[in-house]
Image (cartoon, rainbow, N blue to C red):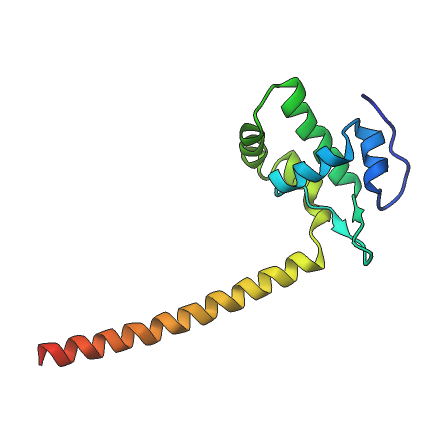
Length: 132
């Protein structure tokens, strides 16, 4: 289905459904199965799809319905495309929430690394005590 996108920044789920021919319930399901499909949410918790998200929905639909991939196979294919089409289409999707999540994960990793350092020193002290 070829459909010209109206020129706007965001599209609601009903608009995306009409544009792509994919039911809203299927779009929500795909969001849970395809990490790259991650539309922003408005303050009122409504999905806000960008043009890149719509391109990704079209690609997922193509993989599943035309190329007959399974969900897992389509996910692997999108990952394999990596820095190609899928990554370019979804680049604008990166939201502030994603950056905040990465910052939290980085802080958690740093905290865990410090804890491991303490455990390592305690083990070395214990090893020295037992050897001595």
